[in-house]
Image 1: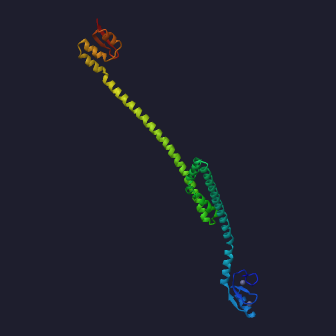
Image 2: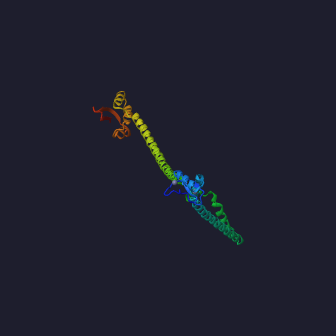
Length: 269
Ligand SMILES: [Zn+2]
Ligand SMILES: [Zn+2]
């Protein structure tokens, strides 16, 4: 149906249509031309604006019909693919059942057990479906917003995987560091124990050691040779053990040099 204004070269939407056999149409701008025409031809005009719009809607929506049929076609193809898969599974299971039958009858129960175990560990309901559903949406979807959501979702999943991986790596690294820290704490404890021991050792040593002043003071209070010998024995002097203690010689006199570095001990023969 032609909805062009009958006035030559006019491109405006039509509003009026007369009842002449030619069904002339006029736009609002050319209402005057319509009136002249009607007077001349004695025809009546009808407002066809709504009819025109209705037709326009139809024309435009029809343009989408091929997408509808394409969607149905593609979906049917996919349903067919899934159906084929189901049929394959069905046949496979039928063959397995026949195989079990043969195995049981030929006294090979152990081999039948393997098949049953395989069936028990399949758990196909636990298989990852999310990714497939997303792919299906991407394949069949025509709403760009939804496709974008699917793509974003996939990206998020990918990001999550990367994050998980780097988190696990960090955990591993941390475990290594923890081990290192543990070792280092143990080493520190050993060193600290050694230091404590050394401190105690030196404290004891210091207790055992006589200062020169103290030695001189104690020396001046002594009179007997045995008392001298006991005191001198604490100093670990060169040859004193051998010459005085083992040979049992008495000390007659002592002389300490001014720089406190040497002691001269005179023996009583
Ligand atoms: Zn007319
Ligand atoms: Zn016109």
